[in-house]
Image (tube, rainbow, N blue to C red; front, side):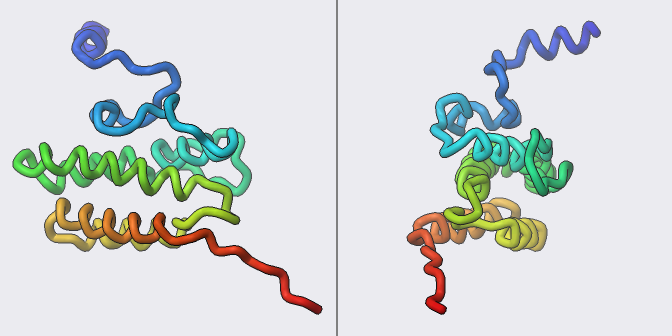
Length: 154
């Protein structure tokens, strides 16, 4: 209990309802300042970061989730890379998460893409280079126009 009080006493104050890992909060836009398309968009964004399904249909809780991925990247990078790696990994999470969490009809990053990104990060010998490669790919995908599906004429 005393250790918990000591940790909480030195940690920055958490915003109500914030679920992005504490060490990312200083480099990403606060969740309560983000404009979401719908409540469901916000709940999928939370799923992306935490692995928690909050009244989401067809949602599988657990890992991978971005809070865990950032932790694994930091361990892999070691103390020398952490100052450069942490902000890039956090910003990448916000970029990917906001796009992936959108309605499936308009999202530009899918669950299949998340699996590819995760594989890229795991395969990278240098986690910083892995994050930069995924960042470049995710930015290119997010910049693409929304694919409009037109029904075929009978």
